[in-house]
Image (cartoon, rainbow, N blue to C red):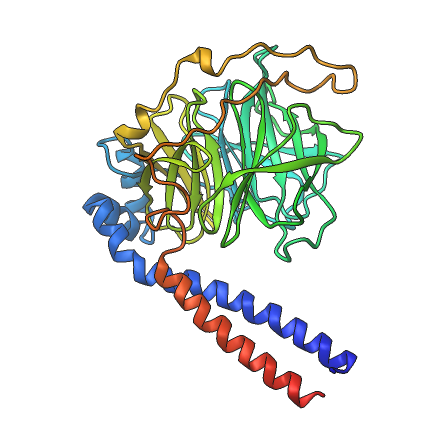
Length: 396
C-alpha cells in the first residue's frame, strides 16, 4: 500500500504526465500532418500561413486580398491588445460587419464587438456572470422577436469533472456598439454520464436548441433540454459522437448542417455521426474557434494569440448542397411557460439520420487528431504509467 504522501504524489504525477502527453501529441500531430494539410490547402494557404508570421505590410496585403478567390484567406486580425486568447467567435445575426469574440479563462466575463478591419468597436461586460473557463460562444435569433441572442459557454474543465456543473450565459445582442455592462441569464448544466471537458457550443438557428461538444479522445455531442430552466440544473444528454479533441462547433445559418472544429481540420455534419464533408483548415497557432458567415457559404476560424488572424474558408460544394426543406426544420413551437419567460421558444430539432454512403465519426477518415498523434500519445502514456509504477514500488 502507498503512504498518503506517496498516493498523492502518484496521482499528481499521473495527471501531469498525461497532460504533457496530450500536449506533445498535438505538437507531434502538427509536425506529422502539416504537409498533408498544406498540400490540400494549396499555395495560397501556404503563403498566408507564412505571411501570418511576417510584418505589417504582409498582413495588410492579406487583408486587402480577402475574398479575391476561392482559397482560404485572412479576413482580418484582431488589433486590440486585450484580445490575446480568442477562444470563441460569432457573427452578429442582426448587425452588418460585426464579429464577436472573447478570451479564454481568467479574463473576466467580457466580450468584444469587432469590425471587419479587426478593430474593437465596443467592449461588453456581463453583469452577474463569472468567467471560470470560457471556451466558446454562439449567436442566434429569437424566433419570436427577431432579436439577436449571444451565448457564452463557461464549459472548460481540464480535470474532466472537477466542477459540479457548468454554465452557459445568454445575452440579448447589444443594439448599440458602445462600451456597456449588459445583463445575462445563467443556465447551469450537468452531463448525464459524468463530468467532461468541452470547448464547443452551438445553437440551432430555428429551434433555439443548445448543444455542447466535448473535447476528448472519445468526444460526443450533448443536447440540452428543449426548455432551459434557471431554477435548477439542466441535464445534457448524449446524442452522437464527435471528432477527437474538438475545439469548437457551429450551426449553419439555415440549420441544415453543423461544423465541428479540431486543432487540425473541420468536419461538416448533417446530424450527429452523419458526415457530409471534411474541410481543410489553415495552420494556426492554436485553433480554438469556428463559425459560419451570414450567407452560409464560408467558415470563419480563429486562433489564440496576440493579433491573431481570423481566416475565411470556403465550404465544399457537398456542404453547400446540404440544405433541407424548411418544413423539416420549422415545426410548431410550444407555448412558453411562466418559469422561463426570457427563453426563445424552441422546437424539436430534426432527428439524426444514417446512411451507408456517409462516413461516421468513428471512421478512420474522420477529422480530429491524426493516427500518428494518437500512437504518440499512447507511447508517452505507457512510459508515464511505467514511471508511476516505479514510484509506487519505492514508496511502499
